[in-house]
Amino acid sequence: MKRSLLIVLCLLFGVIYATTLWDENLKVRGSMAVEWTNASAETSDGGMLYVWTDAHANDRDLYVQRVSSQGNPVWTSPRVIDNKSGIQKSPLIVKTSDNNYVVAWIDCHSTRSGDIYIQKIDQNGQRLWQEGGIAVTADPTWETSVMMTTDELGGVILAWTHNDDSTLYQCAQSYGSTGNRRWQEGGI
Image (cartoon, rainbow, N blue to C red; front, side):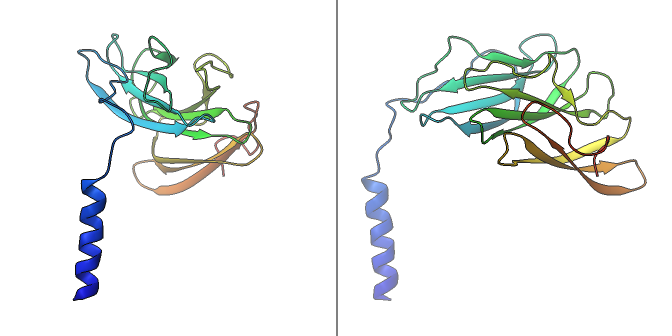
């Protein structure tokens, strides 16, 4: 009983004396548009890169904004990662071992079901691979549940669920630091 009371008092004390690091809430991006899923990764200086999709243009596009460790936006406006026609959605971001970042997303510019695309950016939001990203998958089936991790060689390994309306199976693909596909087309 005494131990439980001590734990509760310690937690209460921590909450009462907790302080925020920033003076006010940070608005990373603002518009009248609807914003969808988002992701983030820490920068080498303790800041963050925030990636999201929204429809403030005519389509649902993919953006990035860098925020300093003090909570200030580093850029006056977000940088575009991808703005092909159609919908880009469900972004993920990981920091690679070469201090850059790979963003993965589902891109519905050519199929309703969407394909997986990736783009490498630096911490200044500059795209390092081809315009529009690299198509990881390009088929009419559904790809869902995308996951991604760094490979410690400046690249990434992706995994996803492939759904051809009758069968679900897991796939994976690896990309090197320059965007070179390492495994067979379509993944393993």
